[in-house]
Image (tube, rainbow, N blue to C red; front, side, top):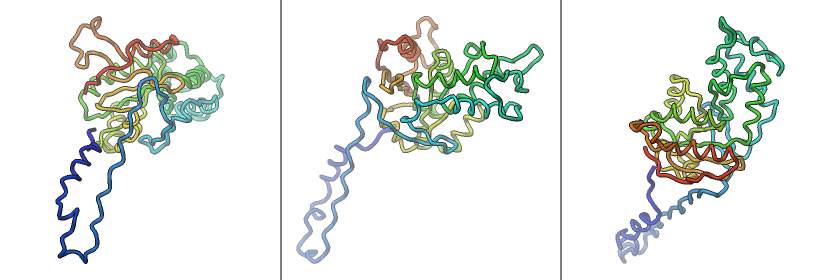
Length: 290
């Protein structure tokens, strides 16, 4: 993600041959040579404690995302998302909020609702809002309204943006831990497809093949990544419920998972836990590894 700095460009311009900067008498009648354009100053990355500016992006399906509206999740929007997910699992028509989940054909097994399939419903319904379900979060769900309440209730949840690439081995190592952390803490997550060599088709194929519960925002030009100051993949940025940056850095202290779990420092989990308790994280920034 390195870029030619403005200072480097100025230095380069200073080395332009004098013959170009000051034409000789022989070329006096020739039109003047236009000076090369000077690059605009680089975007100053968001600092921890600052409010993120509003920005827009498109996801892999071409659907727009806007930070300005990400905090607005109405009951009607949530119900529509749940019904769209239910149709992928066998529902033939839209369901009311008081409808039992057992009315969705593919959720049932011999002993009632199948937890893994209810998780799939939650992931499908919550994906547009960056939500990730796990068996703990769906354990009490009985009706469509329970899922709607889960989606609608996440409006003010912390949002994790992660610079991500399926070509990055470290991104792959962290997938399971990232989703488990977000689900456990009731947070939201959006991936920034910030590797310029990753095509939208590559990203979409990877997500669909692995069935990842992940909404990816296309950022090949790194416009959003530059706002946050992303340096590596993965590099996570945590916004609180009012979109102030509260943590930036790595997911935990042990990317290859070679340490004992009790020795691993779970930076992202600690940050989300603190925000969930209404306080600021003790560790605000770490160095991303990738």
